[in-house]
Image (cartoon, rainbow, N blue to C red; front, side, top):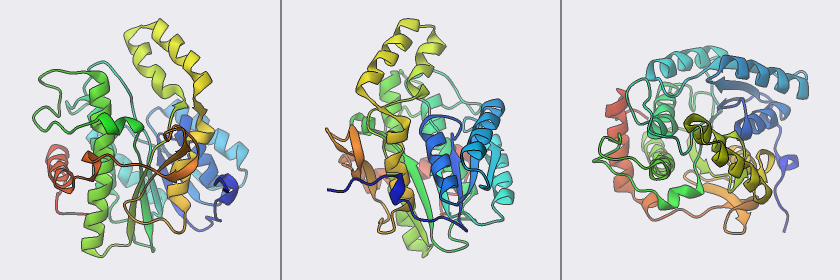
Length: 309
């Protein structure tokens, strides 16, 4: 069986893509692959210095590509709105691909600028708000895709509407799993709303399997647990590099036959590694009533319009 690789990506000349968290890991690999395939690629990054380094790296590896940098802090809703305005200018009002990739994992209890629990606020609410602000660009020049990166951890997640903001107890892995389940419910509801509105938008999701990037080191660094950071480095022996972990995202972003609502991940060893293929959605990730309630609650929390696409 042929395993899909970067060599199978189509020519993306004339298209425009935005990748959040493009300064490292899966986001950096995704942005470079899109740029090399001809897409005008906007790197949306929180840290200006790391963003500039990432931009320079893409331009060196893909000379002649149209790559740009926009500051984006998903943990600050006002910054998200400002970034969306900048993205609209950088993309000339047309967006073919939005990759909601940036994220944080297994952090101690922290709060966003707006007071939300950091993992739910960044991984879900930040991307929810960004997609909302960019909705006039989606489908404006033909078919657009929104690809949101989830995780195997979604399978143990559940949406606790009574404690979304971790005001009554917090466990870092439970919070992470909830945020990744929210990514999938957001994808499902986005597709339902696009279909109902007759918008030419495909909402898709992907997960990288088990992979090794800087994502797993953030929590140990914040808490000063150097032994945990060292342990995470040891586990890299058993994980894929970011170059492999990005394949499901790029597959969802470019596969001509992809259907709205599809979810992709590695095809081998319980979806932990290997080439991209359709992935398993938990029963909770397919609960459309929860998806609708979560959408309405997310709109309320972010101050956006629930009825809008």
